[in-house]
Length: 435
Image 1: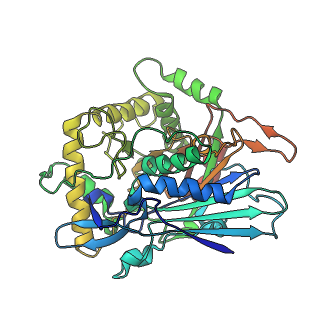
Image 2: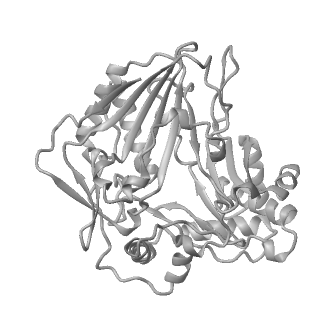
């Protein structure tokens, strides 16, 4: 094993601090992503691309300083990014299939990751732990290279993570750094009042102590489901709804909910009636979150109840109404200011924000807008495979499909297809699959 220590190219010199918003305080949250490339990886060239990226992204090399009495801080200075390089002589080739979301219980991605140590981040030694770690694995027999990237959620959401990795990929290929230019200073919401009408639902959703359905307490009770839809199937679902401004993604989510309600719910108490939707609120017209913001710029609003929880059209249109509402700047301000207060209170009381789920709600967290494999391909067009881990009960994740290699040739992926993954009670899994 070779361990490289990567510094930002441009030394910062004097220490600078970035104040975190309360909505950044996912102290134990991680995004662990793995990318598989068929061949041809230049470690020296990669080091150079990473160093050049860090010169514009010094925030990523920062350290969490915890609480100073009013603010939570990340210190930017001459910190390092650990990069491990492994030569694997045991495997003959990449061992996993094409499923993007790998079951967390299988631990199959762990050998390819050098995880950020979240236990350290919540301790008094938090400033000693990097917030981003990389591991490169070369499978000698197949020539494949694997990049495992572990990212503390305090650095930002999936949008921020993707922009960082995309920049490294561009510079590695001698391309211009992608736009937008990263923005690290953020609105911290301390002086913005909470909306008391929103607080109960937000507190219930973000406070793990109130969890009503937690597969972590009984991991054997839930199994992961991965379902692949081709583009024609998704378009067919969309055509069934007709009219309005419902997207194909709305239709896909509505179909999953409809199937659960129709074939898996044993009585009305088990029906899914509402949804929390993860929504990126960056946009040019938003003074709180421009497109280049590197932070957690995600709303998680609760939808209205479905008037008919067994109607594909009604579920899809209710989802779309929630998304449209979330684009209103005043709603964004009220929701984020309230979530900020809730998360600060949880952390101040020595707790950790953790999403709760009730039996009558499902979380929709789609990465459909983020084509990870194509945007972080390091020049291996249509030959990069992307993997990630973590989902949970009634927590729906959506991704683009992976390309497939059948040991002799690459099979072009369906660009309009999607993978849906979530965890479901064991006794309902087969009913769902059969339906």
